[in-house]
Length: 274
View (cartoon, rainbow, N blue to C red):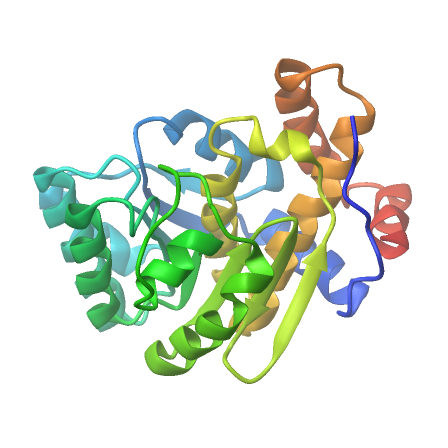
């Protein structure tokens, strides 16, 4: 197994440690509207870092719940007409109540229906937009799309239009890839690291969006929240790969790393070394 190189993250390590500690202290209520493939995994990831996940998806309930949640994730991965109405209602409520929310435009650009829905959701001012390079390019107006849910472009390829998307929407844009780029249109942070096995387990990318939503519940600096989530994922993925023999054991090890990261002094030092 070949890990991605992990050069220095240009971000205060103490901020990452502090954000993770705040999650464990406050257990922010995180409202997750996500795709049916990753619901269980996403809930387990949030529980592993100490957040409180709530998979409330009924159109009749989402407005009320988005208003009381600490953060909201809207992931269009397995979108249908019923989910589309619920997601729109949740986005409207989050915007009205000032609840930070994350848009994950899964496979946008590859299929017209979901692309139209995701672009419509931009009207309700997501706090963060998280996607792979192809998804971000498509949402920013570039022609073409990825290979299903997989990107056909690198995160660096998407960065120029990602900056434009951030400037145009007011959202922080988090572009996932071998190196994650997080930008508010003016400032850009690169977060390298992780492991190729992270692309072989269903739901890892989708759960990153949920973690950003959770951290937004305790951290008001949007750029910092997205950077902390990407860094935590990169560190956990890199460490999990050292202890696994394939995708199945990696998935378990990844959850174990998330649940133990920052809980002991040695774990804080691990973050500081990355």
